Every structure is written in structure tokens, then in C-alpha cells.
Image (tube, rainbow, N blue to C red; front, side, top):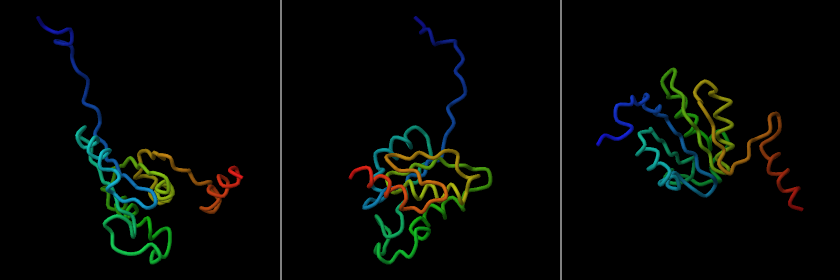
Length: 139
């Protein structure tokens, strides 16, 4: 007996995406192992990054001179994308700050940004603004 689905045309396969995973403080690309494995098994391209002085990247946090330098692995990856390719950025906690910087620097290379337990920075405010707002509400 044929199944009810037999004979029905299946739609086009779902689009394959390029996911770029950015860890939070005190983590590295390793923290995305399970998520990256699931995404790859679904046919997606995945880059899990080690930010400056994190994970397998050599260096010490105190040697990172600026937030842009900290975010350089993400910025370099986006700069190297071929014209027309857009990535889905996923940032956990502090990684959300790097996403915001990347979105500003490469708006045409970002298809979507996911802030996973991450605060979105306030436009026109210093980076510490969001954390100060959260801290003031805890008092």
C-alpha cells in the first residue's frame, strides 16, 4: 500500500544557510559543538569562532587593545564572504556586542542576527550603557 504522501510533489528543499556562531565571555568556539553539529547535519555551513584571546586563539585578554580587535575574527570572516553571500549571526551573551559591531560594519553581509541571552546595544550609547541599565534595576 502506498503512503498518502506518495505521488505528492515535494516542495523545493529548504535553503541552506551559513551560520556564524560567536561565544560569550570565558568561552570559545568549543561551546557551540552541539549546535554546530546539529546545523551541519541539516546541511548548513557553520563557522564557530574563537574571538581574540579566547578558546584556541593565543593571547591574553589584557593584551586585546580594543573591542574591534576582540571582534576581529568575526569582522574578518564577514569581509571575506563573496559578494552576495549573507550569513546568519548568532551571538551568546557578550557575543551579541560583536554581532552589533559586525552588523554596523557589514550590513549587506548579514541575513539575520540572533541575540541568544545577549543584550542588544543601544544606538548612540556607549557599550557599557546596557550593562549599567541592567545593574541599576538589580539594586
